[in-house]
Image (cartoon, rainbow, N blue to C red):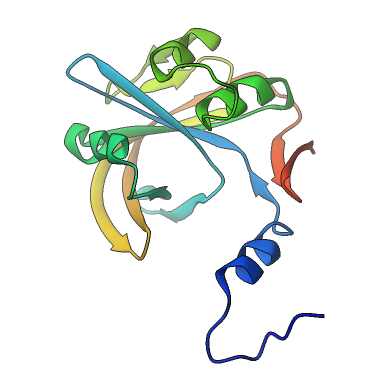
Length: 166
């Protein structure tokens, strides 16, 4: 049994613990100057309902994620069980090139112009209000400007380093 009361917690031990933390799988998307970007995430949640706002954590070491700050907008698309292939692609795990990933779904735009997945369980279309650097990631805060409700379906979650449904 690994010790957990050490002054410095081993990052591998932390990641192993977080693997047991179930997270709803989402794809955060944006568009800027004709370039679209999407990333599979589980680190996203509600911040407040007044004004309606959410937060999303993204790896800041990936230079491609700078487009989120440049665009000033993003959509948080909650995935259903049937979106597992899309989640794998947007996580960069399936070998689908970044410029082809959006062809795996049907997309539309709402208020901000960020790509919204047409059949997502729910999508939150957001105006970026703040970005904070936090260690290896940055946290994006967004004010929700529109909500899209897709068909009701089982949610896709990530637990124990694998996809599950709920």
